[in-house]
Image 1: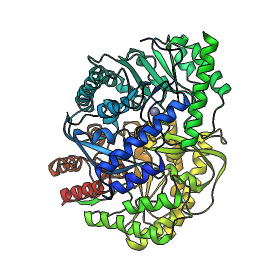
Image 2 (image 1 turned 30 degrees about the vertical axis):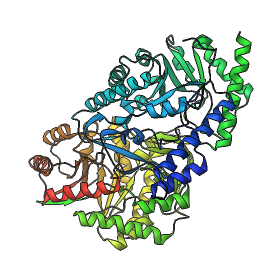
Image 3 (image 1 turned 180 degrees about the vertical axis):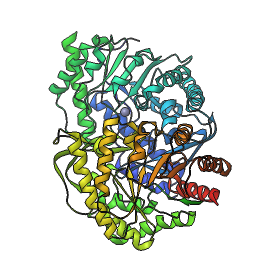
Image 4 (image 1 turned 120 degrees about the vertical axis):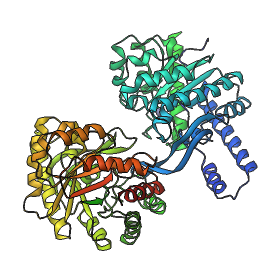
Length: 323
Length: 315
Ligand SMILES: [Zn+2]
C-alpha cells in the first residue's frame, strides 16, 4: 500500500453530539421511531466525518456514533450472548457486562453496515475498528464454555466471518482493539491464536490497538502477532514506553499514540512534533501512523477537535521536513 | 454441625441508587458528604433485604458508598492522597491508587457509621476492614519502612474496631487478598498487625482471603489471632482441600463455595458436594459458607440468585 508519510488517523470513538445522546435516551424510552433514530445516527456521522476532514485526518472512522461501548455493542449482535445488567468498573462508572450463555455464532453483520454507510459520505481512506475476540471474552462472563480459550476461539471465528464480509464490501484497513491482552500476559498465546483465526484469509492492512496496559509484559511477543501494525498509547505515560520497545527491533509498523485523551489540555503543534520524532528511534518514518492514544469520546467535542487538528498539523509539518 | 451462610462484603448497588450517586457525586468522589442519609438507608435496607430473603444469616452492609474495593478505606484515613487508576487484582475493576504522603491517622469513622446504620436494620452484620492489603495496594511516599506503615495502619484499624464494637459489632472480618501473594516476612508482620487490631477488643474475628488458593499463607496462618479463616474454594478448590487435609486447622472455616465473579449459577449438587468435601475434613461445629468474593462483580439480579441457590443448597 502506498501512502503519504506519517498518515494521521483516529483510534475510533469521538464525542457524541449532545442532541444525539438526547435522542438515544428518548429512543430507549420508545418515544422516537426507528426511522428517525437511524436518520439521527447518519446525520451525526456526517457531522463527525466533516470534523475529522476539517481537522485534517487522513484515515478516518465514523466516531462510533452507533456503539455504546466496545464490548456490549458486539455482544448484542452475536448469538450466544445475554446482557443481564451493569457492572461497576470504578467510582460511578459501569458497563453492560455480557454473559456467554450458549454457543456463540454469527448473526448480524457487525462492522459492514457501519463501513458501507461511511463509504458513501467520504472519499478519505477508512479504518474499521472491531473489538478482538480475546477482549470481548475477557470482559464478559463465561457461563457456557468449559475453558476461556474455547470461548475466545469460537468468537474469533465469528469475527473472521465479519471481516471477510467487510473486505468484500471494500474495506482495506482493519484495526482489532484488544486492550485486555496485557492484563493476562500468561494468556498471550491464546490471544495470538485468536488473532490468527480472526485474520485468516483477510486481505487487508491489519492493525491491533492495545492501550493502558503494561507493554513490558507483552513485548517482544506481540511482534509475532499476525498484523501489520501495532498501535499503542504513548502520550499517557509520557513516551517512556519507547524504552521497552527499543530493547528489540520493532519489526512492525507503529500506530504512535501521541495525544493524551485523558487530559483536556490541548497539546501544541510543536510539542506533538517533538513527540512524534521520538518514534524515529524505533522505526523509519515510512512505518509510522500518527494517532491519539485511544478513542476521544470522553473529551468535550471542541477539545477533541482542537487536539486532532494540532496533531494533523504537526504531522503535516514533519512530513514536509522529511521529504 | 451448624452451617451459617454469609456474604463477603460488597453487593451491587440497586439501579436507582447508581443513578442517584452519579447525580450527586459525578464520576468519582471521596466520602459521603453529598449523600443524603435517607437515600443511603433506603438502598441499604434493600440490599440487606435481598441477603436476608436469600437465606443469609450473617450479613454485610454491601459497601454501597465505597468508591472502589477495599482501597476506599484509605480515602477515610488522614495521610493518604489518591492518584491514578490501577487494576484491582485480575479483575476488570479499577481503584484510585492511594499514596501515603504523611503519617497515617484516623480522622474519624472509617466504616463505623455505615455499620451502625446497617446494624439498626439487621442485627447480624459482619463489619469488613483490611490492613496489609491496603498497604500493599498503596504507594509509600512517607514511611520508607513497610513494617511501620503496616503497624500504623493496624493501630488505626484497632481504633476503628473499638468504635465498631461500641456501635454493636460482634463480627469483624479483615479482608486480606494480598496476603495470598505475599512473602513470609510480610506474613509475620501481618500476624503482628492483626494482634494490634485485636487488642482490647471483644469480638469474633474473620480473616478473609480470595482470588486464589491459600498455599502462600500455610502453615503460618494457623498462628494468626483470628477465629475464622476464610478460603476461596472456587479459585483454589483442590489446593485448599489439600491444605486442610495436610494441616490440622483448629480455626473455624469460612468457605467461599460459589463464584462471586461469574453469572453462571452453580448446580445445587455441585455446591453440596463442595460443602461435604470440606465437612469431611474439618473438625469444628460451625462452617460458614459464602460466595468466594464480594458480589459487586455481578449484575444486581444475579447477586441474589447466587445467594439464594447457595442458601437453598445448605438446607
Ligand atoms: Zn484504547
